[in-house]
Every structure is written in C-alpha cells, then in structure tokens.
Image (cartoon, rainbow, N blue to C red):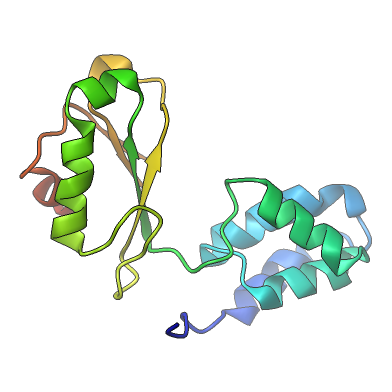
Length: 157
C-alpha cells in the first residue's frame, strides 16, 4: 500500500489547542475538528487526541471507527457523494457512479492519486426532486447526466 500524504501535525496541534485538556466529553467534537483540518483521522492524530483528552487509545479508536462520518484513510480535497437512493437509482445514478469510476479511475471508497477527489456512494441525501444528485464538497449538483459530471465537477456547477 502506498504511503498517504504527510500528516500536518501543526494543524492537529492547533485543533488540540482549541479543546481543554482532559475534556473527555469533547471526544467526538475533537475528532470532527481534526478531520475537518486534515481531511481524515491519521494514526498520529488519534494518539494525540487520546493523550490530550486523557482517555484510553482504544476508546478513541472505537469512536473513530464506529461513526461512518470519520475516515481513517486519507481522502481527497473534494469528497464526491453519489446518491443511490431509490429515486436517484431509478433516474440513472448507477451510471453516474460508473462515469466517475471511468473518468477518475477510482471506485467507491477510493481516492485519486493526486488527492483531489474521493468517491463515495450514499443511500439517500433527501433531495429526490433533484435526482440523480451528486454532492461535491458542500455543493449539490442536480439532475446529473453521465458524460457531463466531470465537466460540471471541474467547473463547480
């Protein structure tokens, strides 16, 4: 397995500095903040969080692996989520996923080698009227058609 990107310990230390030492009730919030800062939860960050909050390392790993929102693998700068809920599925979302797979050279749960994109499939985003829907970062892309998505993604439309 290829090594991931270098871990930005300065960013992690900055996040830790925003949380009081020993505040065990802040574990989930701290992990969210770390992931927001470095886009995933590297081992070094998990160890630093356990030390900072004074909780067992196993508890931090348990929380980090329990919640699907957390990733222990490096993720791309833009997380691309393709909705595969019933309406999106019927309106062609599986073909949109295939379009991403061919265009980006990655499958669901994978990240491009340049760390620009991570592709994820989700069950429903609650935007059925816009189906099929792709969420690129924080932006919702509606009525996505195969063959156009990579252009739309690069333009942010």
